[in-house]
Image (tube, rainbow, N blue to C red):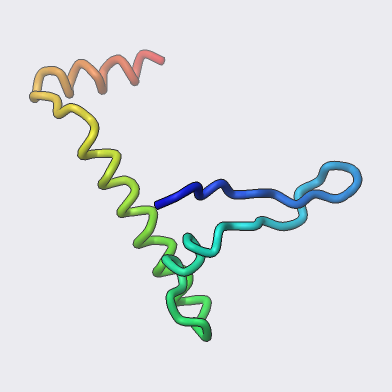
Length: 77
């Protein structure tokens, strides 16, 4: 995938009013031109799940003890 920078359109006071996403991403989220909101929601869910799985592949696995220590450290915060 190429540059998928999302842009925000704002009013004169800087309040966000709209979002512009690259057409490549839009076509992944809603491949059919006449898709429904339900299909858009499913496409967004699929896209986010795919991104999370890609990120998980790049994250080192923890053994049981390391995972427990990580979770305990999170509780301390």
